[in-house]
Amino acid sequence: MKKHIYLKSQADKLTAGQIDRRQFIMSALAAGVVLPTAMSMAGDAIAATPNKGGLLRHATGYGSTTDSIDPATSNNGFSQNVIYTRGNHLTEIGADGKLRPELAESFEPADGAKKWIFNLRKGVTFHNGKTLTADDVIATFNIHRGKDTKSSAKALVTAVTDIKKDGDNRVIFEMSEGNADFPFLVSDYHFMIMASDGSGAVDVTAMDNSTGGYQLTSYEAGVRAEFKNNGNYWKSDHAHFDAVSLLSVVDPTARQSALLNGDVDVADNIDPKTVALMARVPIVEILETTGTQHYTFPMRLDVDPFGNADLRMALKLAIDRDELVEKILLGHGVAGNDIPVNPVMPFFNDQIAQRTFDPEKAAEHYKKSGHSGPIKLSVADAAFSGAVDAGQLIAASAKKAGIEIELVKEPNDGYWSNVWNKKGWCACYWGGRPTQDWMYSSAYTKDNNWNDTAWRDTAAADRFNEVIVQARAETDETRRQNQYFEAQQLLHDDGGAIVAMWANYILAHSKKLAHGPDVAANWQNDGNKMSERWWFS
Image (cartoon, rainbow, N blue to C red; front, side, top):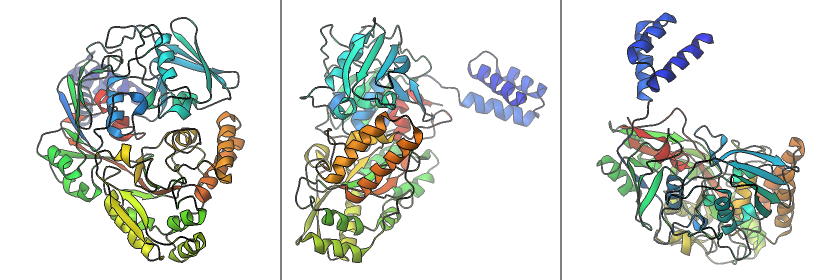
């Protein structure tokens, strides 16, 4: 054990430039390591040392001409990537999946987690030259509060009753009920801290009001975003590229061709059908991570006929999930069970039986619903790669239960503003969240704008919202587990979301790119922080 610690210490000195390669090898030999192994260890340590410079060109499978740089209205992977490239938050999820302070140097609860105190880092500056203070944090969060806010993250801060400062570098959040997960919530991408003008106002359209490793220099919604290195980033060991170019390439074939042709360095959201083929290309590295990404088909209860519980259940039973995993994900994932949480998250209820394709029971519920005629399902590959094919498979399996589904192929551009969260039934993806409360507060509680199933007014939905409030403040682990178990059962039995598949993140990149030993799976692209964590080797 002591030998391992010593060698790790020497490797750290080598990567930090405190000793050279020869000195490292000599120290390893002195510790009893044979020469070939010592040389290999030195090579590995040097290869893991970040290099500075270069232009990172990233083709992402997300983006729409209706996008905006306003973090409050961000609703897809492109705009989320823009946020994490240009800005910071009070906390962040690290590459190892653990929560850590970011713009906050530390944080602590008070009054049974009804109050959270964040101590800010000193000396952090925005790209416009302003020094970060508590006023900026308060002004930023106030954008997401209030009755008329358009923020998609409104539900995450509904319980916040007041935000105060204690000097320039301390912020105190006061809440109507305790929330043990609040430090997780403030890492949500919508809550990028922006510079205020001194009167409590924030210009959400400004490109220089953030603190991240790169400054946004050019932005064309649904097309591209260009960044230059901050040059004075407070994280001195991050943001290694000179510049970053983020390109929206929704078509999966075009995205992959761009990588193979050398036009980009990385392409995300790789179609599972081409993974094996791309893995044979000598210049390409495939990186696959398993996290909380899931593909859903939300049914809005406020649009006929989805307010009918029997019809919702009929459709849930009429989907062959195993076939979707086999033919759409090609095994790069697992079947979903109509709840937006999985075993990687705390308090997962593994007692809920996996829902399977059952055309006979589906037919029974469909008959009880009293519905007749085709049911429209809107799909586009903007939702996720293979969504159109998935829709066709769903229509085919539902037909075996006597249910007619009319597939509506929607345009990719504008899908997230014109189809999702508006039309009765559509395809969707969710990156997931690290905690259950965060996931529910993002898409399932009654008080948020992203409740894409409009599941608010049934008896089960009422009970669900009560339980979530109780679990949020509960500090007893056993009681909290029971509450989350009940919440999952309510969603499974009555909710409007068909959670069909849990999909792995599949990324392809040039072998010239390098990264640390851990790659985050809370979002795609190393938590969408590739730009500040990766480098050219």
